[in-house]
Length: 291
Image 1 (cartoon, rainbow, N blue to C red):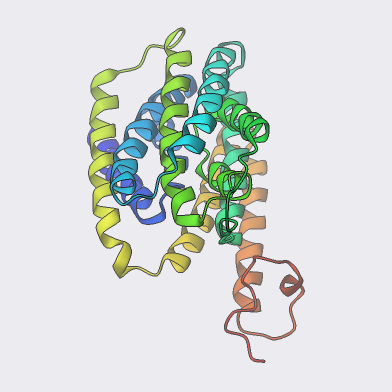
Image 2 (cartoon, rainbow, N blue to C red):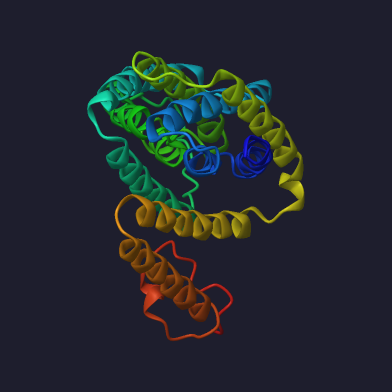
C-alpha cells in the first residue's frame, strides 16, 4: 500500500503542476484511505506535502517575477498565525469531524474550479494595500488550512487578486508562497500532538514534487479549462466517498447522485439552448450551444 500511495502521490503532484493548485485536496484522502493513516496523521502529513510542493512551485514563479513579496508575506504571516492556531485546535476535535470538514472544503474547492477564476487585473497607478483586510482574510484561510490540511489555494488566489489588486499570474505565484507558509505553520501546530511517519511522509512528498515538475511541463499540451473542470467533478466525486465513510453510506450515495445529476445537466446545457443553468454565472453551461 505504501508503494501504491507513493505512486498515486505522483499524480497528485501532476495535478498541482497542471492546475497551479487544487491537487492538494486529494492528499488527505490518499493518506487516510490508501496509506491507512488516521485522520489527524493524514492531515499533518498532507501539510508537509502541500508545503514543500508549493515552495518548489513558487521558486519558478519567483524567477519569472510573478511573486509580489510584500503582499505575500503579509498574507502569509497572518495565514501562519491562523494555521498554527488551527493545528493546535485540531487536538480537541475528533478526527471524523475533521474529515467531514475536509469533505466540505473539497466541495467548496470543486465548485470554485467549475466556476473558474475571474481574471482580475491590477488597478492602474499606485494601489493602496488594504493591510487590515489582507490580515483578516489570511487569519481565516490559515485557520481552515491548519484544521483540515487543505492548502486553500482557491481561497488565497481570489483574495490576493481582489484585496491585493494583483493580476492573476502574480496572484497565482504569490499564493504558492502563502500556501507554503501556512502549511508549515499548520504542521508545526499538529506536531505538538501528532506523530507522523517521516519515512512515508518524505517519500510521498518527493513523489508529489516530481509529479508537480512533470505537470508543469505538460501545461502547454493540455487545455487548462477542460482539465480544471474535469478535476472539479473528480473532487466532487471524492468528497462523496469521504461522506460515505465518515457519516453514512446513504449520505455518500446521495452526494454522488447529486454530483451525477449536476454533471448531466451541465453536459446537456452545453448541447441545448434552453437551460436554467445558463442563468448561473461561471458555470460555463452555455458554451458550445447554438445561438
